[in-house]
Image 1 (cartoon, rainbow, N blue to C red):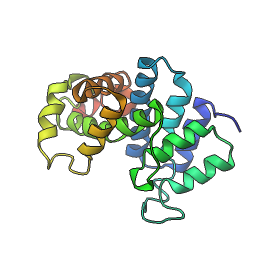
Image 2: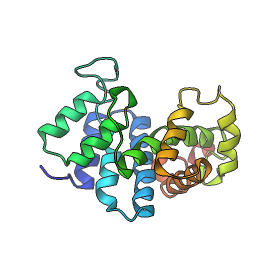
Image 3: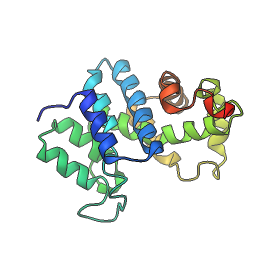
Image 4: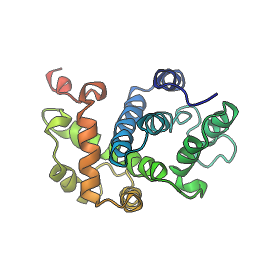
Length: 197
């Protein structure tokens, strides 16, 4: 099967992922990676689809230490069986540093750099009184970045490494991803509706 359409990829994510937060994570990463495709004048569709499906198996197979089925090994096996493009498979493999697969392309670096960052940005938006990501500035993220207890599960090191691989200043990187996520505030549920509830 060639590259799935965006609709097919999203349906696959919804089939494999019941968690609303994981679905939103996929959308956030897609938005950030598509922004980098535009920046590097690459074809946006394959980049976006790779980002959308990068955590396909995480909910069902979260054990990253399982050498057979652990995330993202099950998804990678399926992608090969489905004859997905090699660059999509490479990018998904490269976003998991524990697999030891080197990142070789800008797509690989973008997926790795955006993945963890989206979690930090969403956490910053959730603690704002407005619960609106459009009110978040790079300076807000920078302030929370320094607080190692805030969103402690987010690997700042992965974000820094990814930005360096992209050849982009760390805070410029944060700005690019933040702006991309602001563009889908409604899909992320970070458009202020939570503050009204």
